[in-house]
Length: 166
Image (cartoon, rainbow, N blue to C red; front, side, top):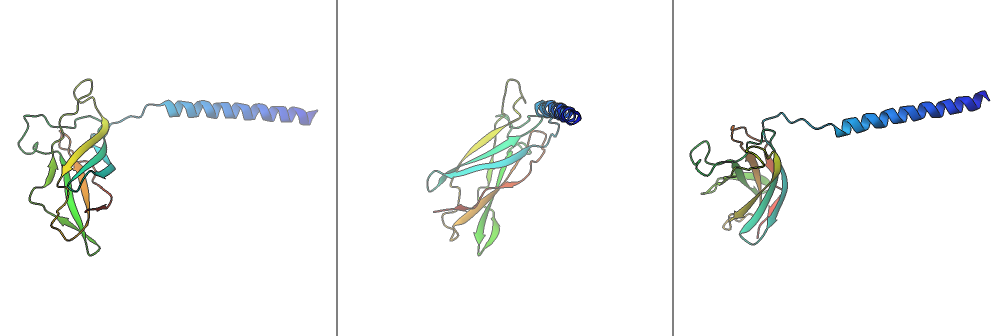
């Protein structure tokens, strides 16, 4: 009889511990993530070659204060560009930064949500034309990418995967 009561008591304790753990897990899981870092973060999503000269780059971004983008009338430094792609070629097994005649710098327009600066995360899709140097004897390239927000905070730098050109 004592053993049976002990087993029942064990089951009750186990059930109470399990229920307490489950409630704690649900509370922690449902807690809204706070986002206070004003520095944007980006991550590489994809690079898709559309033709011999055209490609599409997709990067994800998170910016807690949502101040990504340039207004149409902003054209002077430091607000002339806000997305920067640095071009590299693989030469004899080593990555070499190439400075093209026309740099791969882009203007991401103001990203608007319900109110200005409301959009805090999403994807940026860039259509690239002449995305590599066809006169180069090297056929493997990559890009390093960095984004600046309106407060001129620089994101982390990311890289595409290796890209084999035609």
